[in-house]
Image (cartoon, rainbow, N blue to C red):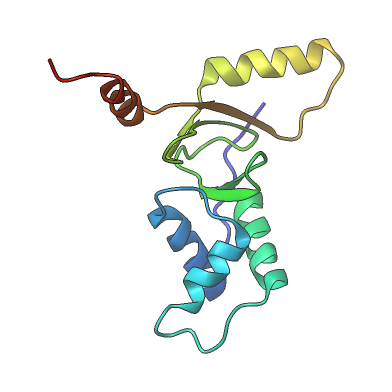
Length: 146
């Protein structure tokens, strides 16, 4: 279902956006990317939305970033080596996002697609819930001093 993608050659804007996504603690929308890059010291003028969207598309095409459909936001790829299948656990409280993938998952999804005569081009799984830190925080909210 997937094969590693060759590393794309990136221009300066694409590299800046990739570095921003790698450093981000949460998924970023295209407009958050624009705002963040506009605040950089060496930024002479704000990037136009089409420029950012083209750069994000190039990063996704190269397997370096993913789009979270439910949030219309982008994250850097943390699990190199997969082209089509990515899964994400997204904390509904703090927004932290963790990527996961695996051969068994890709195999299962590929078999399901083939069984149904479907040619998968991309797969994105989003699991919403609470990260371990927010689970602990939420459980403490219900505790009362004794």
